[in-house]
View: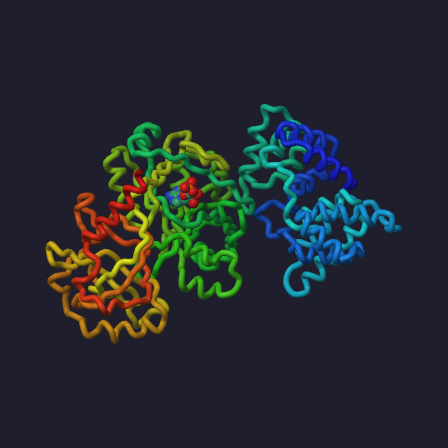
Length: 586
Ligand code: AMP
């Protein structure tokens, strides 16, 4: 197949914005194409050369592309730069450059689809030192033989900006149209949802028809598109929708991970189907140790843990890892993560996606033994709204976003790639954002772990309750200390050290070391939430709960100008919580 034939289709696609027309154009193309070319066409039309979960990525830097264009065409650098400033779009610039040079090319061979595809694959695969030179060479080879319109699309795809506006759904429609009937669309969708590879689906359809798709199963190595949840505002509505009973799980605030395990090899995929394996070697290792079967696909949420306070940290801490090649070891040490598993989609040869949730959960417990870093999601089967609300508060206190309710009925299958009411999230806000710093009193401390071994790892902080003249705990503070400050903490604090809790300190937590309330630190938190373990304003907003400052960070300022009774009061924190909540509700 000539690349030119594909380019004509691209031009037709660009001349319409109608999805139906786009599907017709693509269906015509697929019908008239050899099955051996379908895969490549499907990928390239979507601006890629492989499925998203493969490592090869296009996206050559603009500057490198322009350098290659200049070398391949002998165009005048000055005029190309001017054009670039005017047009912005590299495809258009390239086409213009080619139109000007048309007459001068003497020897050129027509480009085939295979040749363009192979060159793009080589460009994507060139990595490491000297890769720029290779990328340039492979690209220049096809640019040399390109016609203006062809060069336009080569420029766009190689720089990662194909932008034909062809969504996966349009390709699915067109494949069903070309090789089956409209009614078969669901089968095409299912095949895509369980393999995440539309090229493979297209090729299979072309070769074997719809029967070929029915033979396709979940397989290790192809990420399954994630099942997603709907949202409802109250436990009553959730239970109604679920037929009176459901499994409620903590909704962790982390990074969703799908782990594919076979013969001791673990591959991790994100919700967007990127390969995360190299960013989480610790999770890979932990899963290998916890896994007891031979092959499986399991899902869970990776959550960072503060080893010094034992609290789950906000998801941003995990994102320190992403895209990071250097300093990964430090990132792993500073932000260790734990995975909470919640589903099993494949186990030892059996596709579990069509099995009801209780069976999938049983499969999960069969193939994993719990360790420090590998746990199951905290789950409870409930049918009483009041119990759900209780569990919800417990989840918030544990640092979660809320709850996930999951249907337990016969039809509670894993709906890959779709959002529905088999899973319902419950995320009502019971926390309010903090914009201002507070001044808190150190009343206790916890021994450090990991890199903080032998030092204080975290401090127990309190507000001052003026009416009762006592100090009420509000937070465990472990972040924001640089190494020097940490090392000096004992010097600052040990003179206030006590054998037992100070009588004016109200605490439900057992600190390793207690202090006389004296040292005041300035702290910035992310939010104020309800918590059963802290005593600040206890019982004033909800029975059995006090206020807590979540994700507190020392600003670096010791408020030596303040005496402990000048610290932020419990009433002030209570007012801050209410003021923010009103904004959220209003
Ligand atoms: P949302 O992103 O708000 O639509 O919520 C769905 C996300 O919640 C999923 O993609 C998971 O990353 C995450 N999640 C956290 N805990 C769970 C759980 N127990 N079950 C399913 N998903 C969970």
